[in-house]
Image (cartoon, rainbow over all chains, first blue to last red):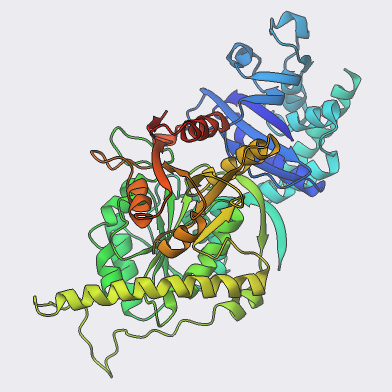
Length: 178
Length: 381
């Protein structure tokens, strides 16, 4: 089983990130489970959400204490990541990983998702685009499945859906070059 | 159309409710049940469900309007949590006492104070004695399925008691996981239209909410007790039929024993925590430790005979109580101990998970170590 942790700020949409990832991995034929770290939603406060991915049905209900992957949507939150991450930490940042001062045994990759979101969506909406980086760097989910998941979850949001799909592709290609 | 998709537990509950075609939806949203009325109001707005949604001014009004809807003889639904359920307290025994087969969803949440929006079972456990059948769910699929079964159980002429379908707030309501959504035709075949036994009818006038003198009040309550005992058989029957129609079952509908063969020690849990207990006992069984799980689905009626059979070879049973009966341990532990009185199994109670404190694998292992050392239960913090 793989455990994924999203760390963002209230309003950035980290809870939606985990939901979209769970829907997408299920569309890829795997079992999945997404849930928020039961916090009250407060704009700007650190928010955690989780996604579990497995080949078999998931019955575990505890919170995620150790993740295979972490995705940090706001680079000012890197010091808030207290959970152990075993494989990869993806940070939305235009800096180099070594400049962030993250102490971990996991690999750290930086992808400048905010710049791509500003260019493609016109707003700093990084929560969904970030899944493109996750797909490129881990291979745990396919781009097609993410597109389908966005349509299931955000179908009523019209052009925003299309723009997010474009942003995901660009973030994916950008991350592939990393 | 039948399909399996990843959605939130609350949305799953709302879809199940839609498939049961309730006519009246008196709603007063409260976290973490809010997504249920939110989804249902979408269904009403889109014309996907032929129901009247009433935006009431409190939970007391929600349950009162639910009573009123049933008095007119139609299937109805409401949802609540925590203080919302507490505010309904006054009307709960009136619904059951009037023998209205209502179904209500409870997104289990701690009671204030201090204020907590997070999960435990203090809301529903505090309403154990109000004549409502109380069924708990481990997964979102089980919550979806239990809503559909609940109407069948409640509306059985042998039962005619309301059902509270409980699922852990956030742990289930806000969790996204795969749910098999069933076809309307299949649900219709399983759950026929509601034909009320008694309702307000000008051609056949009856009195509702009548006054009972000391010479008859006890008989009304005794009838409820008999109906609750009848519900034990009915839940088993409905659970079997549900399995036949949809291919899913949850023990016998009341309780499920997991890995109890050869086990001397077992954990009894209610709701979503059972999923985590399953993981722990799987690990321990691989290490050669024979630990079992008793997943209690029905708090009321309490399946005493089934519990006795499941526990017959056990030395010690550790009960996880997500509610404290302040002054006398955990209410569930006290119930289980009393159900198993005279049996050789010893019952130890562990109050845990209050106000959303995570009951993780480590805590469950700690509980198991404690009972295996024959030590007393305590507050597992």
